[in-house]
Picture (cartoon, rainbow, N blue to C red):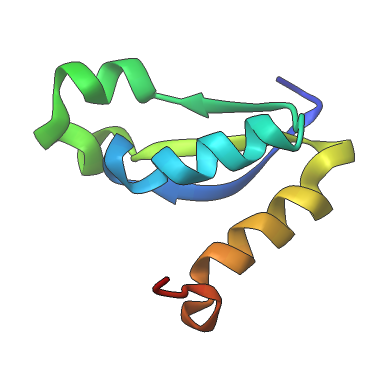
Length: 79
């Protein structure tokens, strides 16, 4: 895990479902740390430190761009 960098922290798995799909689609190397523990004990998420998104150092720029695009409300369009 030395080659991975923390770029985001989530409280629940439902918060990053779309993000996971986009990262997989872009073939970015990533890990959601504490995901299993919080799925078993969801109300302990804050005590555990949340679900941490770790991305390989070579993919950080691309992953950050994807994350920023999701956080931009103007990119959401109703069809």
